[in-house]
Image (cartoon, rainbow, N blue to C red; front, side, top):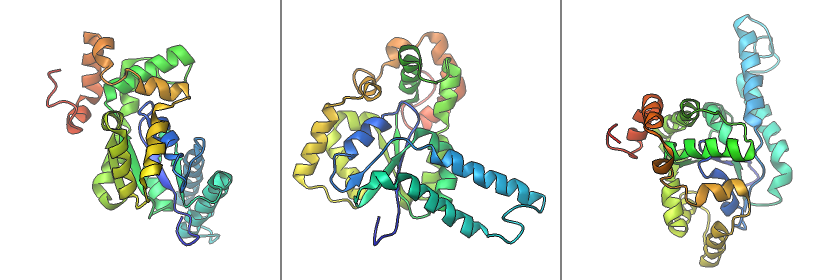
Length: 259
């Protein structure tokens, strides 16, 4: 928030990509507040979808002079602010983390056109392994097959395309880099976001990165870099290549499909 203007930072990433872990670390910064996943844009997008559907028939709030699209955006921005206001608690910056919001990146930008997007990217094969493990071990509502999980991971392509179009608002970091060098990756992220990062604050955040108390975060960071190499069968690998292998190459995780 700047000068009383609510301008949240959105932390996005595929499910099981480490966003909970990063959100936990960022909450240690005294100028940053975070909160539980809101799923708010699932609701906000349905409002727009209903209004747009009625507009096509010449009906509804956008057709009948109640409001224009700018008004609707403002109302939805105020709705979102009211939903998270209790979590902000006077902090200068609010970070919202809901992996499902990757589906609504364009709506987020329409309603908060100046908001920064932080995108945490992880090797999709490890994401698939983590989703399947979380479903089996903790009854998470993830798909059961490699094919469906790979398709779910592929939804990050919407955020990648946003980054190509709005580079000034977008910052991408890799989960693997964060695991390997938490301190420097955090310093780089905070610099991009224009958030001060004194040494003692970075020390605290760095310490928090190793003191993970949430099981969903712990399983993401302990032994899960390259886990797919031990978990994937030959059939799993072929299935993933067919669904999302091209995206894996675009992101630089592989040079070609001969892995």
